[in-house]
Image (tube, rainbow, N blue to C red):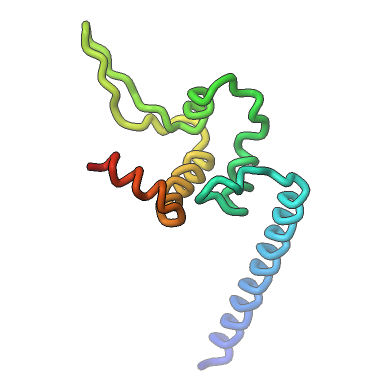
Length: 128
């Protein structure tokens, strides 16, 4: 390994260590904030500390939503509607709204059947 290559390697390694320290510091701040909230959202199967932080940060104030449909629309999880005359069809997810909240809720929905046998059985009946 040449001296220049070695110096570049050392420099890159120091940069990686620097960013790792920043990430660790940010994670500690998030953990401290979440400990202060003492939210019940982590009692939902599939939602851990990280998803809790994302969901609470994106929603900010749950009382801003009058009903679950408004929160669903805010997350971009509602389906598009095709209307023509007497026909109303629901299409794909619209993907408007908060992409971070949508990601967190989808991750929680994916994790739920892995950790809850009851939900796994329910999901199996829905998919049949």
